[in-house]
View 1 (cartoon, rainbow, N blue to C red):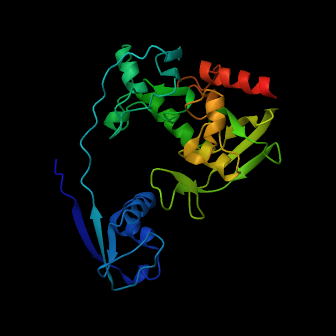
View 2: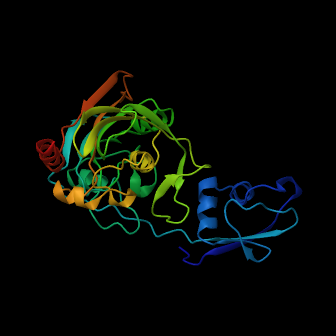
View 3: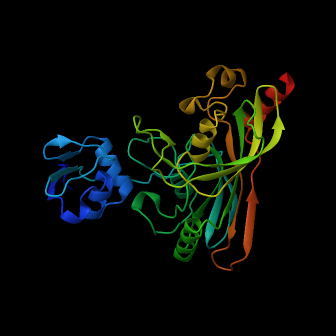
Length: 312
């Protein structure tokens, strides 16, 4: 496999006059707009020799040059034993795991820690071969620093069904989050588009031209320094809850990446964001019957609640 990036030089046709750079690249090269925007953000797009950003406008007759990085080497799935990854449910079609903190959904470049896929392989589970090689069977993901319920397809039928269900927003995903302060109103909806942060590509942010993202939240209990929320997702963007809570200026406790106060996390003994996927419901991929599963708080989150409750 070549490790040399490819340079594509393309004249801008009249029909794309005035289009945004990311939209023009997406149409000309058949990329997703997100991928095109990432290339522009990395300084890999020039127009007539000058570097342009994703929201700049193209001019008919000008030349766009796009540097396309070589594809990364395939990531290998390593079978491993993960003692604290619980199997909540298992049948011929899917396996439902309670993912612990510090475990990624699947292997990825740069990640050397444990993965759900590796843990399932180490426990002898055979999962669907659908999807990219490093994420076979994965139909949705949880952040490394988020614990809770995650479903993995075992049969090809289940992969197709579950993947479509998540696209159509059929599953009901509920999370509990301990957030700093007290949201006003105490129950509400955040409807704000999300995409990569304009200046920190390892983060995500609310941006005007991002992907539609909707989060519903309700107060469970208010403490002196924080609020425990029940959260339902209408969409499933990367870091969605963390970004939306931060946008409300009530970041998840312990989420230093998105502006949380590190002193509060230290006081509560937290080394990650207080965020847990407490329930997951969907249509069984073989029978169509609605199935729903729940998960208790892991020890670190339960202990943090005990401490903050005693302080209130």
